[in-house]
Image 1 (cartoon, rainbow, N blue to C red):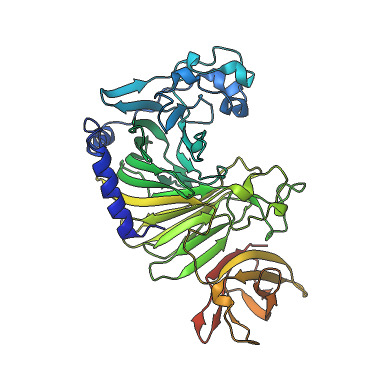
Image 2 (tube, rainbow, N blue to C red):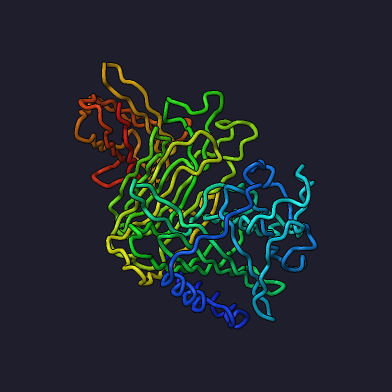
Amino acid sequence: MLSRRALGMLLAVLAGAVDAAGKDFDFDSLQAHARQLVAAPYRPPAAADAALVSLDPARLRAVPLKPRFAPWSMASRFVPLPQAPRADCAPTQFNSIQASGVARFDYRPELFDWPVAGLPAPGPAASGFCGFSVLYPFGADGVRQDFARFGGDALQLVGTGQAFGAGALAVAVIDNDGRAQPVPFREFWLLRPAAGARQLRLYALAESPALVGAFQIDLVPGAASRALVRAALFPREGAGKLVLAPLAGNFVQGEHRSARALPLQAEVHSVDGLSINTATGGWIWRPLGNPPGSGSSSFLVNTPRGFGLLQRDRDAEHYDADAPQPRQPDVWLVPGADWGPGQLRLFESPADSADVRNVQVGFVPDQQPAPGAGLVLDYAVQWSTDDALPHAGGWVVATRSGAGDSDGARRYVVDFVGPALQGLPAGETPVAVIDIGRGGGLQRQRVVSNPHTGGWRLLFEFKRETDAALQLRTYLHRADQPLTETWDYVDPSR
């Protein structure tokens, strides 16, 4: 896993490897373009073809680009494939940076094989692509597979044997209702890599009425695929608060909420919790929820060492047989430098299907950039399903809740595992520290070994004295030394 120092060194190496090929178009020139745009009145993109509204988005996702129209030769290890337009996706433009210069790749209906998806040719006139995907040969057989997807405002990567899940957004802006509104990508420039290259550089421009953002992104495929990002953000007047480096995923239902949005289905989510490695080295775990209305939670951690949306439950028996969730990766972000004081903000909204991206988390700096002034930041994002991500010596693997024995009481069961919990002296039980927020009182607690997980189970019950939501926190310790991360949860209002 990259540290901040290692991230800076790697960015420098990659920059030196590709700057010569892309000397006519680089991050500096893209920033200059972004400054020109932010100084001028906002011009919305051309409206998409109205015919898109009547077409099934699922069918449109299945419309393939005809192979002979791929922007680069199929001899390249990386093959970018612009995607067919959709009504639910902001139109984007696509450019290829080659030795001869920048070549614009414009949308035309005949680029796509519409009948393959059961749609009539020649397809809608549209006004741009719906992002693009990138193929890459993960295995020794040289067969290319989906490696990266850029769609509208999100980037998704996968490694070997993984399924697409959580993504990284360009940037978001908090609106007047307290919701985080992603800023969509408008245009992409891909630097054609050398024949044997194992990373791909691209540039992207994001724009909304609130701001203009310039991005340089290096994609590095592997078992744990990475995106190394350099971003320059230029807010417009009245932009509101920026949410830096947001991550996004889906959570419909899990084991810790009794109310189910989809009663006939098992667990449904691409991620099930937020993990935070604080600036002081502490660890926080927040199980995700599917609230009845939109809301947010703040974590006053200043610049964290890292944070991510994780999929800790990978037991296939907990999902429907054809669900991709056990193979969807964790997404973890490491800031490249100190972003200063601020807070991580978690945004959650209702969702009734796995297609709805209803969870976002990002960093909200206390010192917001002035209108027109550029804010430059570096960070790395990793997608992985293995144990490559950092974590505390003990961590949460399951949360369950229900009604307590007495009227108005609530009961929680939290399972902890990890090496820090396995070396305790014989007969010794870790001690739980439990904090019940104002409006509730702890009634009983018990810590027992759990032979099914090899860890320890905490059971506690508290009496509610309010109808409002309650903040709950707990961790296990021994001799006043924490053994686990802190489980942080909000018991919903009645």
